[in-house]
Image 1 (cartoon, rainbow, N blue to C red):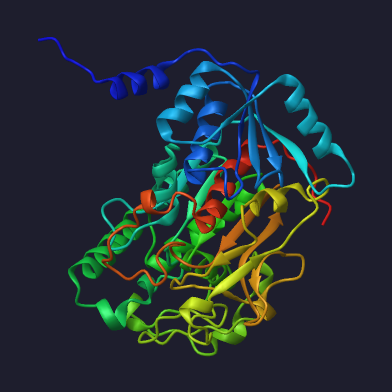
Image 2 (image 1 turned 135 degrees about the vertical axis):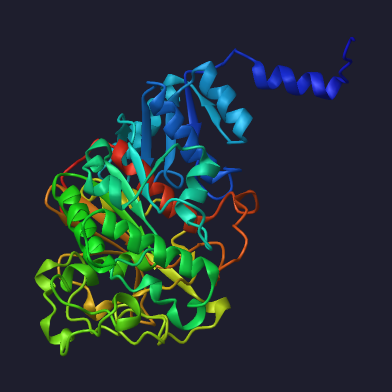
Length: 423
């Protein structure tokens, strides 16, 4: 059978498969007006690195644009994925580099050369909620591996240079879901699975298993790894470190009551980002401690925003990378852990984004050993109050999401040539 194409279809096929590029460089603009799909642009950057093509990240130039040699395969990939690009001559590309190099502008060029080895910490099986980071990577077509407690304790972290933690409870209290979901089949199943996993790995309690995991993750950072956490994986991680050797779980979680005066026994010298916090172990309260501002913040949905700090691109490269965006004001969103109490953040932690009126921090970065960590409050940047059982966010409806761009900045960071931070 002979298939007939109309003129429009034939033009589309020729346009997608054309192998002639009339220029020397591709500029993938990341400003608000020029880019049709900011999120998939990060996938193009990853694909380019993976295919051994040099790429430059132009920090603070038109929203953090990418500059790539104009190879036919890259052009085709941009067209297929719907990513906007501009063709430049070598002279035009050099003019941009010259502009960026001027001491008078807050811009810099970072080469992306290393393919990030990405792991996502997630239990096997389905979850009654979605992970914004895996949604972002799947939408941008960035591959990743799933690992969990067993793989971490068996030493598999050495195979990666970046790991993500999301809606996780490292305290052994099963997400503080007891009050609302203790009779739900998914809650009972997950509790049984975690207890069985703990026993199989030689631990009497889930809290002991989780402590061993957070210690391994801390060693991963010390040895040069990148850790990115969102939602409850941020504060519950530090709580587990501070409560090492202390029973903070009530009997419905581990079979015996929490030990007396646990708050006075916390060791804040063990933590990464937070100090001087007070725990809440009430099983009927959906909260871990006063690190999180969810229950005390008073802001209407339409007024919930936070601002990104601007850093010196030529001096503070990592914070600059982490805050690349086409806007400095980000729409707020909630999670089990929504925002961090500023007064409980350790000295030396770099604040990346905050709501000054509420005195809350939404996005922070810190160095530990040879590596670093980033904590980002909230659950899903395009679902204001994501609830258990809600359908996943469709990123085709949010291809230019500035909140999701912050996630993807973190994913690309391991690919960058690292420069010493001055802040």
